[in-house]
Length: 142
Image 1 (cartoon, rainbow, N blue to C red):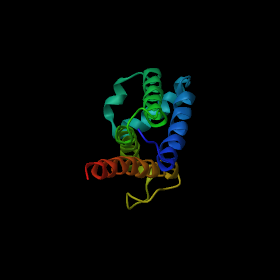
Image 2: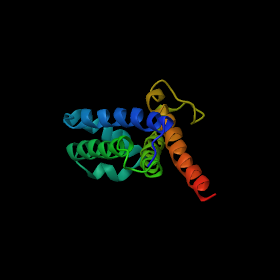
Image 3: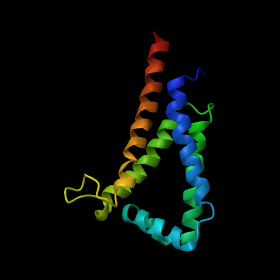
Image 4: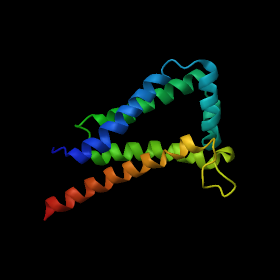
């Protein structure tokens, strides 16, 4: 499998960032895990049923899976892009369903929402990985 420099940039940088984020969440204290769980519950009410520690561990491990898929070159770009897209979709769902994160128009980020709104870049990277992979398959068939 050829691995281009553009693929390396699209995968390694966000992958390392997400892996580090997951590593940082492995030993969350109960209060911090509870705050993250509360934010996630705006978009996904079912997470309220978990205890905060379980939620924190699940979040950390999911970030390990997504980050690992991105940095491991044996994972096809399209698969890594789909994993990253699902992850970004969850973050953006939380952003749009939390009133405090957007201005009155429901789109532009408020001061509190800027940190999460930047995750739209993650969605763009995911889309690039998915579409880039599709383009290579079309060229091979010709």
